[in-house]
Length: 631
Image 1 (cartoon, rainbow, N blue to C red):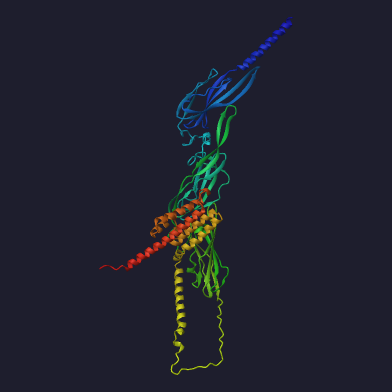
Image 2 (cartoon, rainbow, N blue to C red):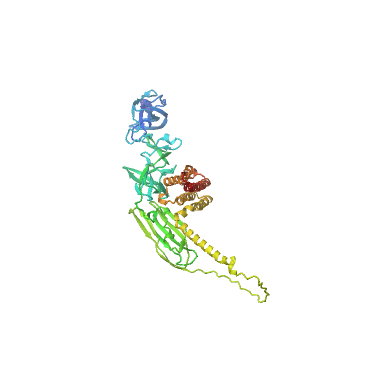
């Protein structure tokens, strides 16, 4: 009996102990805690930045109410962030802990020191937190004008269109660099744009407009970076890549400025979340940034004076070679000789001396056909230009074709240097003469009766006009030939005048090449041919060397020649449009046919204006000579 009572009491006591342990587990300590979490890694909060106030609720099933306001900040979002549960047993005592975290996303609006709290959840009151908001850009590492030292601004990721950050910030910027800040006219310079970034990856880089190279002729190089490399700059490691490279040739002396263009960069920004259980979480969101490189100024010195009389216009390092296919020729039959110029520099602007001035006068040389082959490298433009001449020996004999000198300026040595081709001996044989067929005279042997009038003496045939025509006509033909030959030599002696008179004809030939590019949809070749046609026409018409061929000189000479300002403005506008189209996206270009029609119209108008100006000048000159003074 007693043993059964004891067992019954023991069972009751065990059951009571279990109930007490369950109650202890269920009613473990409840609490509410406030905590301030800055969004930036530096821990500072600035005006315009985001930060968080988290409400940590332990063992309370109720949900905290959203605050009506937070001092110094604007509430953007309030909601449940995470929850966790754990059971701990120590020395037979079991404790259950349930934690719910609610986060307030806030944007700092004014500087100062503020406090928030307490809040009450399920009858439990929390602590009070304090935080300080500083002026934007006042904390170390912050960049003025950016939302936060932390570049991962989730609001920025949601904006419509790219975010403009000017010259860049501490996470992404562009540096423009040039190989030399002091150079000579026509010297090749290397202009590069380099990207620096600390973002993990770059998805896209594209130029939204072209850089402004006023006073330069440019050649775009394809030698750019295909992947990111690492470089230490100002004590910080960046991923870098060369995104643009140009070979530029200054066309005038003075201070020339290069204005950087705008680039759009697509990348991923990081957004950081702080969690007591998972430490720091990172979420990547795509953003687009607009950034421009720095501007540069180049001091351009003129080429040393005096320039050699036979200066080719080349600036760089060049050599010349020649080739004569055959040393034997026949009088009045065409032959050929070619000169090949190779090297690095402004190859496209080299010209050779007038061969008619150095070749024997018995050999007439015609204008050459040129073939330019260039490669735009990482530091210069290299290649070759071939001058193919046709000539005509006027008489038989042995003649010496003298060497041709190529005089160029070497910017490395600062001197004019000369490369010389080889000399040739040309043997000219006499051409085959055409045999004149002689008609056989047939005499009639039959006797004919002749009646002589004794009253009239016969008149000698030598006194007739027909007889003297055999002398007058050859004399007139010889005189005309001599006058024509002299006129021909005078015209071809004035090479610049001949080029000026034939400027329109040469421009039409170049425009035909541009029309061929339209038919083949070759936009890059089309704009090259259009620029070559316009600049070639101006060089021939105005008798200007390549080194003096720029907008300022051309505009001044056209104005002095009596060309209307409207024609000059149309010409400059055409040049600007063609040069801009070469480096702009295809969508920003005008139709090639429209540009071609505009170019043809501008050149035709200029040709008519030149004729009118010359006519006015001649009429004025004749009027001054014919006016008699009034006494």
